[in-house]
Length: 258
Image: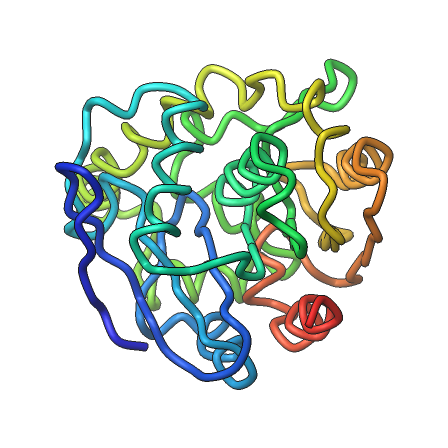
């Protein structure tokens, strides 16, 4: 994957691009995205992948003017337009899934294929989404992965998550990103999307890890019920980071969209 830049109004947006085939736009979750991301590279085998970084991630501009869900949605549509894309396959994970769903709802005639991978955006008092803003680094592997031990190794590259030095570096590195993400995810990741799901016309694939402890799999059924065209693929032995733990299975599900 190659990192590039595109100007969107007054905002410099960084994005990753690579592969060949049908155009596919991937919207990342709160952890961001890198050129080495195995999921992106797997998608790029059969697709021309574009993965824009949300403002505040990587070295994209912070864009204080992007304040709420509508701003995020319209900004991302502006990015798609700036990239010269028409009706790409739209794929989003977690926070990115929330944005992708809003894009498909607000412009239903411009999205014909949609993949939502453990998306945020709905709320059920009986099954609350974990408050990631109040979670500490040592808690994240258990929340994000089916195999917490393997997840810890992936997140920390072998460093001790309870080490004060690691904690300090983690908090500094994530303050900028989480500050941006918090505009649509804090205090709860709910901005009225449930009322707009019915507007989505796209052929929709919902993918969820059966061991997701961050956003419980019960939300998969809520998305499926809310989107008339939706199909659901539940993946065993996978958590919220199903794109890492079961990359091939997620890519296979996405590939059914074309």
